View (cartoon, helix red, strand yellow):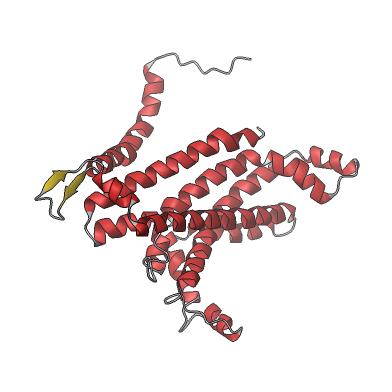
Length: 293
C-alpha cells in the first residue's frame, strides 16, 4: 500500500513548511547560534571588551564543583518531576475512564491546573507551605515536622519538585485519557472472558498499547523539567537556600543576568542544550525499541 503524499506543484509543500521553518530559525537556530558564539568569548557586562578565549569557558565549568553539583541536582530534579507528573496522571486517567456519571465535571476539574502559569503555580504552592501563614505548613507543624523551606534545602527542593510536577499532571492526564479511550473495548472484553484479572489486563493489554503515548510524554516531561520549570524555581526559591534548588536552567540565568558573567552563562546554555539533545537521542535510539505501535 503506497502511503506517499503527492503534491501537484512543487511550491505547495515548501509554502506549507515555511512558517514552521521560520519559527524554528528565529526562536531556536538563531538564539542557539548566538549562545554558541558567545560561549567562546569573554566580555564585560557592557560589551566594551570582547576577547576570544576558545574552550576556556567550558573548561572552567567542568572544573567548577558548584556546576558539577548543579548537574547532579538537575538530574535528581528531572527524574523526580517526570515520575511524579506521569504516574499520578496515569492513575487519574484510568479512574476518569471508568467514570460514568459526572465524567465531564471530573475531567474538567483535573485539567484546570494546566491553565495556570508555572510562576502562578509556584506562588500558590509557596503560599500554602509558607511557615507563617500557610495552611499545609501549619498541618505539618501540628504533625511535629519542623517545616521551613526558606532555611532547609531539602524541604525547598521537595516543594519545588511537587509544584513543578503538579503543574504538568493535567497535560499528561489528557494524553493518557485519550490513549485509554482509543483502546478497543473488544480486546479487554475478550481478555476478561478468557479469565484475565483486571490487573493482568492492564499490564498485558492497556499498558503496552499506551507505550507510544508514554514514550512521547517521557520526552516532553524531561524537556519540561529541564527548561520550563525555571519560572517555578524563580517564583518559589530563587535557587536557594544556599543554591539547594539551583538547577542548570536557573544557573544559566543567575550567572548571566545577576552575575553578568556572559561567557560562562553562554557556555552553560550550550552544555544544557547538548545534554537535552543527547538524552533525547538516547531515548529515541534505545527506549523507543520497546514501544509497540
